[in-house]
Length: 320
Image (tube, rainbow, N blue to C red; front, side):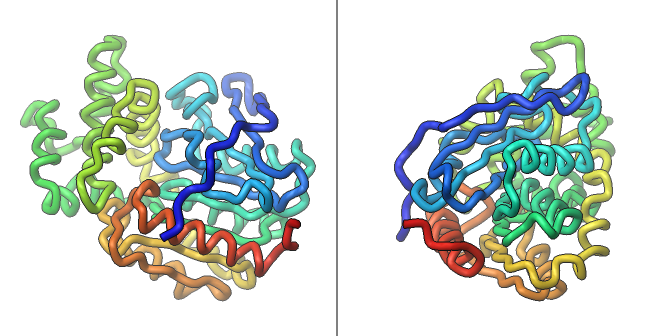
């Protein structure tokens, strides 16, 4: 089974002002002359942990990591104003232009997978190939599965802990109840709500309980951005991303793509990836037998590393 490449430091760090309010953090690692690949992290709100550099061979790839608006090292952290999918996808194109990249591979996992696909639909001329893991489109069907009825049946213990932070009378609109707390002026209430939210998402993410994933999600910096941004996006059903992607699949035809999905993914069930693959000429789905949703699961790591190399062999030159 393949394991992550050795850790490496970034070659360059950038901060791009994308509005009067938002600065986004971008870093570049690997071979400056390698094939460019851009990484869109999940969440929304997870940010690009340094481990994401390790999914790519530093000799073959020029690795571009973008912290989306309000996440990771972008500023201000957890900011909801001027933060939607249209703007984040536009930020991706701004980064490509600023870094003088002609075409790149686009990799996204979880919500980042939806952004990767949306970007490929809007900027097909700039996309050599697409790699997606555990795509979560953020539509109303997916939101209801996570916060109304579905995932709670598989993880009733985690769901009880998630609800314990609310009053019984608020169970009818969980997103509104959490939004009120996550945007409270009381920082203690904010952080308590953020950690409860983050623990719920972490508990659903892996096939087997994984304390390292729970610890990462619930660390204060990650938890507050993850919870605030997810609640913001999911309360708006992903700002229509799911519908736009499904209506624009023909624009992806001919772009090589690999969709990697855990058989037991309970954040975004496998049917989502299969529906996309059926409409995307030039794509294939790799169903990972012993995996859930998390990019940190060993079987997912193995599949991503294998598929990344194969996709590059199809679309780009071999880097000596």
